[in-house]
Length: 306
Image (cartoon, rainbow, N blue to C red; front, top):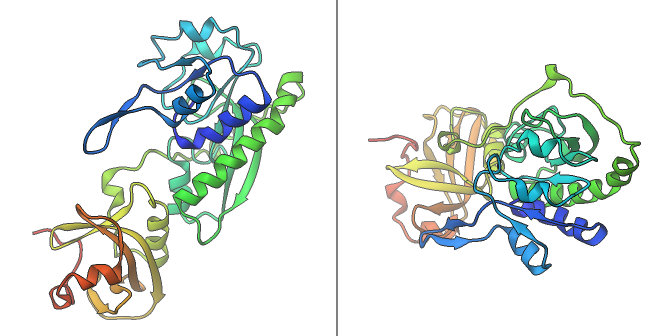
């Protein structure tokens, strides 16, 4: 049971190493400006491998097809709906989840985003039993990953997806023969990684440069951090920070070069290097600056709404 790209390597490994009797994924969704009905990445793989497919609108109300499979185990990864108790209690080997954090830290739907935004040094994958409450089941096994300074949501998404696939395959034999661990989560250490809110995409230049860089990494390539310049939204893909004392107003554009422009923050200057202006494609700052009068933005203060 899964939906996005993150779950694809896991399903591939299961198809290769086990007998997959049914794939459950979210219904097709309308995507893009043209609102094209698009299948999930998991559905595409299931169709390619000719595996029976089930796409309930509300799995709490539609699950008989799952109970009729006589599956020994149910494995989920980023499925996107709450699994009812009727399903959780069904398979003899239980319902297993692959989660992209080191639980009990970052329960919820956006653990990769928040570990980067919060500047964590490591994250990882947890293989766990599913329970009625979100991500609170017993831990079976975990694997750490040291976050690199160059990591963003995109790169970390890919790395953890592969780690999760391999860890699951390594863990399955112990689940099947009943020798796996069952470690209760320490509730006092629980944190949550709720889905990113629209207002959390806006950069706050009152923060330190390190915090802003972490926010940019933690929202790249989706949904992307942004700032306003003369009421126009600019999404930021890449930036670098120079720690430097200054007496300028926070959020002021004070430097423009051929390769970037600098915006003041709490403890220095943030140099924006790659952006996506509203309604346009992403571009390096050099290309953006070639199309504007630089004098029109120098000394402007970002995030001011008229």
